[in-house]
Each structure stands twice: as C-alpha cells, then as structure tokens.
Length: 175
Image (tube, rainbow, N blue to C red):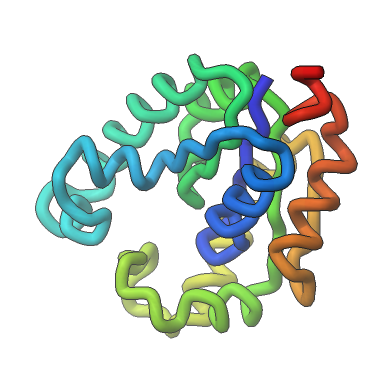
C-alpha cells in the first residue's frame, strides 16, 4: 500500500514526501519528475510545445505506471486528480492524503517558481490560485482518505501528522 499525496501546486506535496520518506523509510516517486524525465523537457515546455491535453495524457500514463508500485510515497502533480482513471488508480494504490492550503499561502510558496505554467491565463496570480482551488476542491475531497491543512505548519509537522494516520507504513511494517 502506498501513501499518495494530492493537492494544489504549492500545497507542500514534494517537500512533505521527502520528510515522510526519511521518517518512514519509504521511497518517493514524483509523477511530475517522471513526466519531465520521460519527455526530456520541463513541464512548462511540454505545455508550451504540445499543450495541456498532451501533458495530461502523459500524466495519465505515468500515474498508471506509478499506481502499480507498492510501499512508496507518491507525490502527484496538482492536476493529476482531474482524470477519473487517475483518481481510480491512485485510490486503489493506497491511502490518499489531501494537503490543503489557503490561496495566499500557496501564492507565497510558489511566487518565485518558474516551473509552474499558468493554468488560467488572464488572471492575477492569486485569482488563478483561488479559481483553480475552487474548481478542484470537490475532486480532492472525493479522493482523499485524509485531509491535512498545511498552512502555518512545517513540512516535518505535516509528515508526522500523516505518519500518525498510517501507522502500518514504513519501518514499523517491515519488523
């Protein structure tokens, strides 16, 4: 069984996955990193060169592959839950944890990251974040087994909270 982290970009999935990895002795698989490796270009370049539909197709193939693993922490891209087949695969593969954050927190976390292409052109940064969160809220809520508000918490605190919810993972399971 895997621990699957979902949530908006900037919610802390990548850094929390690394903390959980150290804490539980589990490997981390990042769907976004796999996409970049497979395509040989950054996510903004993939989107610019081939479009969002192509990116989502590649993402779906990566999610299907990752969902076949066992006993790993899966760090998903923010939109990985948009396609029903991804939600089904992720849900079947393990415990799904939704890392939640307020739009202002997300904006502060990702304001200097050029590796995140615009999702809704023509909006201010904060408007885009709030709109995307609202569009995806129900999907995140439906797939999540656990919801954790990440605002004003360190990655280590968030990882510890997740670990308390999944006591049969990591080193405890292998003894």
